[in-house]
Structures are given as C-alpha cells and as structure tokens.
Length: 288
Ligand code: PAF
Image (cartoon, rainbow, N blue to C red; front, top):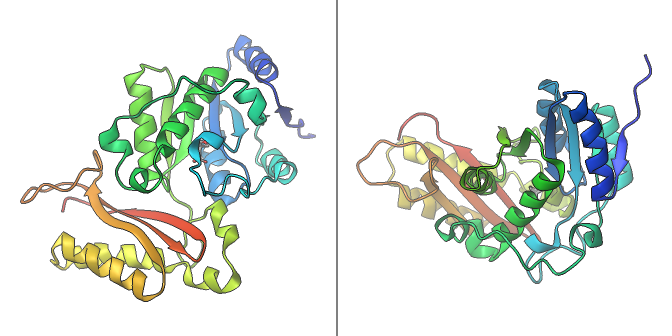
C-alpha cells in the first residue's frame, strides 16, 4: 500500500479546513507543537501521538514571543523541508507551518500571563517573559487546531507544568500528554540547540546530566540539598560552564522542598557551555 502524502498547511484557514474534514469523519486530533529542526526527541513525541490512533498534527513555528533580547531567535535553525520529510516517515498526517505574519498579523497585545510563582523562577528568572510567550503561542495553536490532546516533552519540565496549569485554569478541552526525555547514548538530552555545540563542546555536554545525576546520588547518600546543589554548581563552574541554576524542587509545584517532610523531588539545571544554553532535569524516584 502506498503511503498517503503528508498535508502541509501554512495558513490558519487551510489547517482549520483540513482538521474540520477529519472531525466531520468523527476523528480525534492530537497536536505536537514544535519549533522545527526535528530530532529523535521530537519524533518520540510524534510516535506517542501516533500510538493514540488520533490524527496527528505537528506544528512548526519559531515563536518570536518566547525569545528574549540577545537570544537565538534569528539564528534558530529553520529546516522545514527535512522536517516535513521526517514527519512523513513518522506517519504524521498534517503539518501546520505558519510564518510570523500569519500567526501574528498585528502586534500581539493580548497575552497569557502565567502565575509568576511558577513562571519567574528557574528558567523564568533567567529568561524573563519566556513563559508568557510560550503560553501565548500554545493557546493560539490550541485555538487554531482545537485538538483533543497535545504532547509536550519533559525536557522542558517547567514549560510542561505551566502549560498543564494553563489548560486547567482556562478550562480548555485538550488533554496534555507528557513525553519522557530522549537522550543520546552519553546521556545528553536531545535538543535542537545541541546543534550549536562545537565538536569539542559536544564531548563535554553530557556533564550537565552527570552533575544532575550527582545531585540525585548525593541526596540519596544523605547530603543536605543545599550542599548537593552547591557542589553541582561548583563542578560546572570548574569545568568552565556558566551555570544559571541547579535546583532541587518539588515535582508537584516546583517550589522548594519543605524541611522534614517526605515529598517527590526533581533536580533541574540550566547552564551555558560556550554560547549554548542547555537545560536538563531528573525526577528523583520515590519520596525523599
Ligand atoms: O517546546 C517548544 O518547542 C516550544 O516552546 C513550543 C511548545 C513549541 C512553543 O513554541
């Protein structure tokens, strides 16, 4: 049997039309939002979506609202042709790839303000306005595609939590599905930004994951959390990285752990290696 070819829409009208036809046949829609430059991590998201038997729509849009001044919006890799080929091989039915003028024909004056308790900590402290940009574009993508479900990766742990809360707070009818981190054989979490690393930096890049793993082990061995965090920051600095943070937080709300209470924790870290900013996280199993 020949594979039907993937449908690529560049306009809101076009994708809405295509989705309406599937919905008229009683099909469910699942959205995989991406910024393109797809790697195995993204393809894992589409595989999870594929397993649902829903019609899979992948959006590809480098969202200017979520990049701060001096960040990599202009240089972010745009590889639509090869992305579409990968999605075709992954049996994705539809791609929504609008340009900036299509998604933001006017200055976007209505934006989503996520709860600052969640959006100004960790990555939000170092990327002011980032999560407002993410929420605004995701709200818009969900409004355009009206999916029954949407899949996001756990590498962006804080983003995933904020988006789950957004959907809950606005009573949106989309189920948010989280997909585990995909790692290279040496432990580096897959990310489009890994492509910025020089060969030498790529060899050093697994250190972030190793350092977070070290925090998990130190805590298991009874080291106080603050000391484990400090040790991790020192290891990164000594290896000439510039860490933004390494923090142990509660899985439930990303707040600091409460003393003398058993809780589920996650270790999160972000650091610059040369010009590339990498993030990663590890959930600590069981109660700590
Ligand atoms: O995780 C990403 O790639 C982006 O933040 C998202 C969710 C596609 C919004 O632009």
